[in-house]
Length: 317
Length: 309
Image (cartoon, rainbow over all chains, first blue to last red; front, top):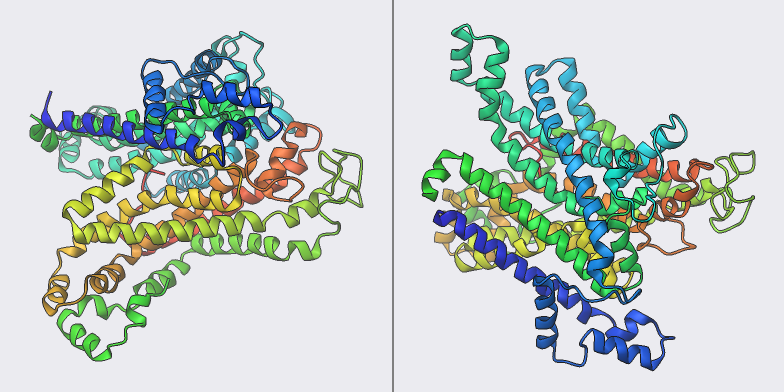
C-alpha cells in the first residue's frame, strides 16, 4: 500500500489513542472520589471499597489506564457499576440493534439522496429544484429529535396511526425480527442525512453537466439516459461519496438521540441511562465505540478521496 | 462583529502609514456590514429574521404574558385544551401554554453563549494556525482532530457523565465541540490571504504578529466567519435542546423547551400539545437561523454551505 494511505491509517490510530486518554480522563474528572460519585453518598463503605477495587482506583493512574485500555483492546470492558453485569454482555444486543438501524438508514439514504441530487441537477432552476433546495434547507436545520418527534406526531399518533410511537421490543427479540419498530427511527436518520448528500450531489452534477465531455456525448447523439448515468454520474459521485461517509460518521452520535426518542433498544438509551447513573464503564465503552466508528468513517471518506482523485492517486503510489 | 483590533488601534499615524502601503485590507473597513446589508435584501433572510424575531419575542416577553405560573397545578394531568388552559395541562397538570412561554430563554442564552465562545476561539485558533504555519499549525490541527473525533452530542454526554448536568458545562462543551470545526474553516480561508502582498507588506513594515492576524487577516475572512456564526448557532440550538431533551439540561421543575418534550413525550398520544409546542418552537428557531445563514452565504458569493456538521 502507498505511503499516503499508511500515513492516514497511522494518524487514525494516533487519534484513537488520544481519544482513549480523554475518555479515560472522564473518570478522573468525577467530583471527589470516583467510587462515591458513582454509588452516591448513601453507599456503604463496603460497597465503595468493592467498587474502588473493581475500578482499580487504588492503583496509580498510569496502571489504571493500562488496565482499562488493555481491556478495551481485548474486548473486555469491565462491569456496569449500576447492574454489576459485564458491559460487553449488557451492550452486545444493543450494539447489534444500533448497527442494524444505521445500516438500514444508510442503505436507504445514500442511493435515495444521490438519485435526488441527480434529479434536482437536471431540473436546475425549475420549480422542483427550488422546492427541493427549500426542503433540504429546512431538514438540514432541524435537530434530529425534532424530525423524530415530528414523525411520531404525524405517523404514530394524531394524523395517521401506521407505526408504533415507541420501539419496545420483547426481551430477546432482535430489531430485524420486528421491522415495524425500525421504520420511524430509520426514517428519521434518512431525513437527517439526505439533505447534506443530495445537496453535494446536485452541485457536483451541475458542474459535470456543464463540462465539455457531456456536451460531446450529447452531440454524439447518445440517449439522455446514457449521458446522465454512464458519463455524468460516475464523474460527479466522488464528493457525494465523501459526504456520505461523513454523514455515516455523524450517525454515530445522531443515533443516540434518535434511539432515545423512540426508546429503541440500541446503544442510545443505554448511554443516556449510563450518564444519568454515572455508570462510567458503560459510558466509556459507548463513547469509545461511537468515536471509533466516527474515526473509521472519516478514514473511509479520506481513503475514498485518495482512491478516486487521479492526482492524489498518483501521489499515493 | 466589530473589529476591535482595528477600532481600538492607538497609533493613528502608523495606521495611516500602513494603510498607504497595504491598502487592500484597510479599504474594506467593515466588509461584514456590506455582506449583512446584501443578505437582508434576500427574501429568505427576511423570513429567517422574522421567524427568529418572533421566537425571541416569545422567549423574552412570554413570561410577562403567561396566564399561569409555570409550576402551578391547574388541571388534571394530560387534560386537553380548555378555556382556562388554552393548550391543556402537561403530564403533571401544569398549564402547557405558561410553561411554553417561560421555557424559551434558557435554550437561547445557552446556544448563543456556546456559539460566541466557540466561534471566537475557533477563529483565533484558525487564523493563528494559518499565519504561523510550521509546527504551531501542526500541533493546533492535530489537537483539533482529537476533538473532531467525537460526535458533538457524545462529547457533551461524556462531560455530563463525569461532571454532572451543569448549565455552564453544557455551554462550554458545545463550544469546545465547535472550536475545531470553526478553526478548520477559518484556517482554510486565511491560508489564501496569508499569501497576498499586503500581508507581506505589513510584515515588511514590522507590524506585530497580533496586528497582522487580527488587523489584516481577520477583515479578509469575514464572509466565512459570518457563515460559521450562523451555522454554529443553528447547531448550538439543536445540541443544547437535545441535551435538555435527554434530561441533562435544566432540571425539574424548571420550564425549558427541551425538558418539556422529555417530560411529556410518554403521554404524546393523549396530550400532543405539550410536546408539539416546544418541538415546533425549536424547529422553527433552527430553520430561522439556517435561513439567515443561507442568505449570508449567498450574499457573500462563492461561499456554499459545507456538507459536514
